[in-house]
Image 1 (cartoon, rainbow, N blue to C red):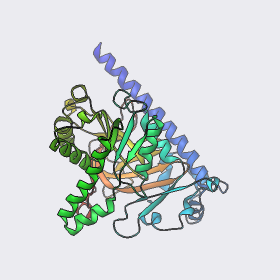
Image 2: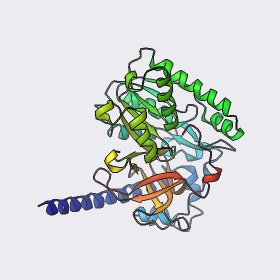
Image 3: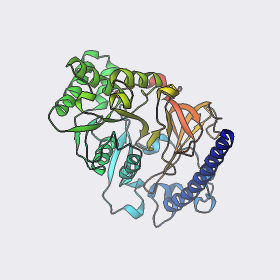
Image 4: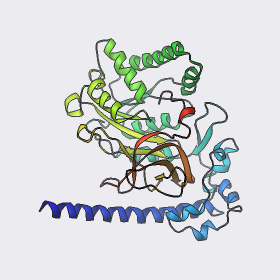
Length: 378
């Protein structure tokens, strides 16, 4: 009986995978038509179309057809005019501009209208209301300034009926301090950030949820411990966090030491995420001690797709369980990015019921540039 049940589950997952792929192919066709049609497309792609050796409007019918495009170049996002990325259909809409990177040189920029709202509303549907109560207030313990993350977390909080409390944090200054070796200044700045967080948490604002990067979550927990209290005692029940610091080892430490145990013991639920300004937000499978705290992320298909590709051949997806570099494709009406090689690597993971498409585990800085990468508050 059990084997029949397992067989039925496998068959059901296969059907879900097939349906998800069909939706991705349809969505890809729709987005390419949008970005390359004269009436709706953005100036960048309408101009780039003249250089291509194929006609995207006629020759892109499914996701695999995107391989006809050359790899997306990092430098295309550096510098202006930034309006070249705004689709003609959206020229009269209010526009945000978000930056990524920028520690040295010109940062990459992305124009946004509503994508950050849509991404985080979809993410909201994955949060358990028991630990992220509707109407609860939030603390945003993360970077501010020209970052998508700050406005996105604030919208997530408002979308769920709460009020978001923010603090001042400049991640570029943190990285400069690290590069200069000014560890005393770094510690002072970190303390400045944590002091802001504790001031907010102890001011009677009834905050129950928070975003925090792993390093800042640890710093907050230790600072509260020094004061004879803890994150659970502060009334926090839900934590949304993200960053390459999220390893199984760190997650075990965070759950068992910093938070006081799994949710059923501590009353605090923590969900890891993986995301950036270009992709949006990749959710993780539920993380548990039974699974060795392994973290597997799934991109928000069909709006964004992650492929784990061969280090030497970015057109070849590696086998399940094998290591490779992250190749991102963004497919929204606001942004089309085919085949962008990210600064991350990891292992390809199979689909599962909630997210019937490929995932990635073990996310870490790409080995080709890891030595030059400085990890700040993330």
